[in-house]
Every structure is written in C-alpha cells, then in structure tokens.
Image (cartoon, rainbow, N blue to C red; front, side, top):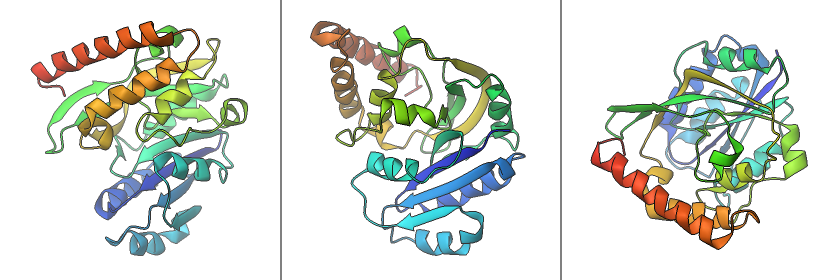
Length: 247
C-alpha cells in the first residue's frame, strides 16, 4: 500500500475532532497513514485532546493561521506520504475499510482517487450521498468532486503549486481547476466519509458562488461570459436542491 498523509485543520471543535480521530484509528490501513492536525489556537479543549493523543499523531500544532488554506499549505510541507487527503475536523469515516477501499484503487498510480460522501444536516438528518468521478470539462462548470477525503498524489502540489490563500472557501476548487485535462483519476461509488452540512461552504452559499465564479474566471478558456453563465446555472441548481430539501 502507498503511504497516505491525512491532514486535518480545526478550530474549536474538540468533540468533532475526537470522533474524526477515532474513525481514523479504526481504519484497517491505519499503519499506512500519517496524521497531521493543524489547530487554529482553539480554546475549547482541543489542545488538551491533541496532547492526550500525541503518541498517535505524526504532527500537530496549535497556533493562529490565516485561514484553512494557509493551514493546509503548512501541512503539505510536512507530509511524507505518496498521497494526501484533507479531512474536516467534524468528518468521520463511514466504515473501518473506507480508506482501504481508496488505497486499493491506487494500483495504477492515479493522480486522484475519489469516492462519494454521505451528507447530513446540522441536526443529523441524512440528506444524500454525493460525489462524482473526475471530469475535466464538467469540473469547469461546477464542483463535482466531494473534496473531503479525496486522495491526491503528493507530487501534484509540486507540479501545480499550493492553495491560493486569498480564497476563504473555494480554494480547493480553484486548485482543482488548475489540474490538466489528461489527469489520471479513478472513482468508487462507495461512501467514504460522513459530513455535516453545517460547515462554512454550506452556510455561506452566496460567498461560495462568488468565489466559484472568481476561480472559473481565472481560467483562460472560461472567461467572463462562460463563468457568468455557470454562476447563474449553479444558483438555479441550488434553488432546486433547496426546494426538494437537499440543501
């Protein structure tokens, strides 16, 4: 199995982080993973939790950062894995074999390994399983990958660069848009992570679409008009999901 670097950025979510770390410890391929936690100087007991679990963490720190993409960029510099995955502090793996299912798909050394994630409301109600296979053209219209838990070859960051820290929410989408069309990717329809819809990308929808437009507009092949059309289309899709209770 290739080595996997799991990166968790967190802020004042000790309860969620404990559950997340528990689910990682239960993974059948735990021995093939390194775990790095970057805490934004939390004051809710997160530091005590990290100290208590320091023997099971490959690296952790608790200091002020400039946002999640700054934390992720710092983390990437410390990784030693063949693949990197970003996991939210309140996310947790759906089963003990979730990571094994992804790592088994790395046999052909793909650049990306994606799966589906289960999304829940802030109240714990199941909403949907979501996440599609990599498609360069469809990605230019909107985010179709479920980024949490996505395996990315570590060398991609050397080729493409790090996350743009000027983004607050959609820096991952901006980074994915920079990937080449001939990228080698594999996908499984298995559910990998369980996610809460209470995160910033789900509660600040207007800002998400504004940053999505900004990321698209930066792409030479999209430009102002196509990016604007996709912005409108994404709002219409969101309105439909809202209407049927999936957003």
